[in-house]
Amino acid sequence: MAGRQAVVQIAGKMGADAELLALMRRGEPAAFAALMRQNNRRLYRLARSIVRDESEAEDVVQETYVRALAHLDDFRGEASLTTWLARIAANEALGRLRRRRPTVDLAQAENVVPLPGLGAAINPENAAARREVRRVIERAVDELPASFRTVFMLRAVEQMSIDETAALLGIPAETVKTRFHRANRQLRQALSAEFASILDDAFPFAGARCDALMGRVLARIGVAAADPNSFVIN
Image 1 (cartoon, one colour):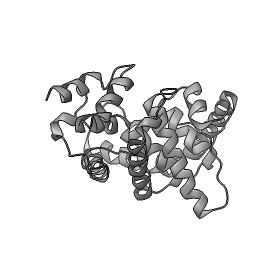
Image 2 (image 1 turned 135 degrees about the vertical axis):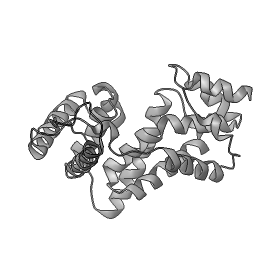
Image 3 (image 1 turned 45 degrees about the horizontal axis):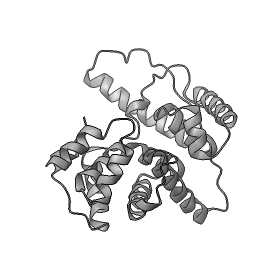
């Protein structure tokens, strides 16, 4: 129990990677769960932005964790655990694309637009409209060039900085800026000036799907699942 409480306390803090890593190396199930809780959505969005398929994106995320957790000793601390995982996920997703087509370009894109009338009031009509708008936005993002789409997800949706995005994708910061600007322009043209910024709810990955993926990863690496309540990160 003490180990689980420690995971909850350190999970959201800067500089917690070393402590979390130590707990995982000791085989603490709650540590593995904390790592996945922290990174599931970001990795899923990144993978989906590349493969453009929800089921395959889940497979990418699962394979990312299995590979990473089997090679924890390879983590040297030169980047954060999150960045390390994202690089593994990007490589896995790109590898799958290369098996489907000859080449793949990687980069970025930007976002949104306002939707008058879908403000503070929450009612069935607005809720239905928001769902439809999310679908429109997701389709528009999917139609971006691959090089714009991935950067867009990292910058606009995951709110990563220019330098973080550049480091993760292995491209110059100026390239990130340029592609982000171009993707933003393409999306604004595609969506028109009516849509609102609701990307925070786009491409959800939580709840039962999140728990199921964690269970599969823990089973594959031979770690007993911790109490579900210990997975909650404050």
